[in-house]
Image 1 (spheres, rainbow, N blue to C red):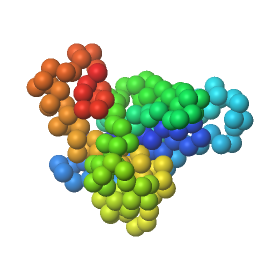
Image 2 (cartoon, rainbow, N blue to C red):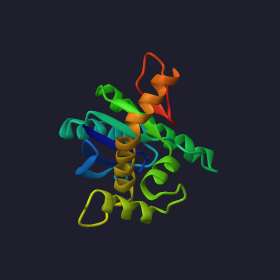
Image 3 (cartoon, rainbow, N blue to C red):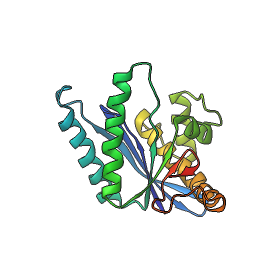
Image 4 (cartoon, rainbow, N blue to C red):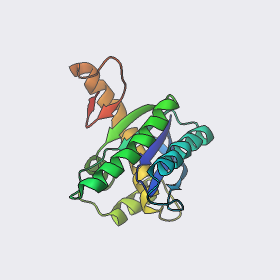
Length: 182
């Protein structure tokens, strides 16, 4: 199974692609989609770049499913709203490409990758490097995206079985949020 991880951001969105065969994970690709070349005030154009970029990544790497980070609430409500719109563009692009989308918080991903939810970006980068046997550290945004893909590779099937057994799955969606389907 090929998994696409997405770390959404309005200026820089990270992506990471891994293959899972049994319990073995293999690095496929990672990178970023940036909107920094556009005027900061042109939100619609920036969201289109994210949407089109995700669609291009999906077309190039042909993932079977995707994992996206859930937005956290900042002390700055405007920043949270902008991040939410960027995340919405990413999720919409994935769904428009007919991909099942799982969602994990940053805390869940950090705990799965580094062993504790308060891991620093550098710790996540180092653990992603080790888990995927990479020759160097991936960029911060790409490392978070790869971390989400790894988290889904390890937790996704278990969460699906739990949701099915407990009846928490909505019949219309195969999407995960915090261990529950919705």
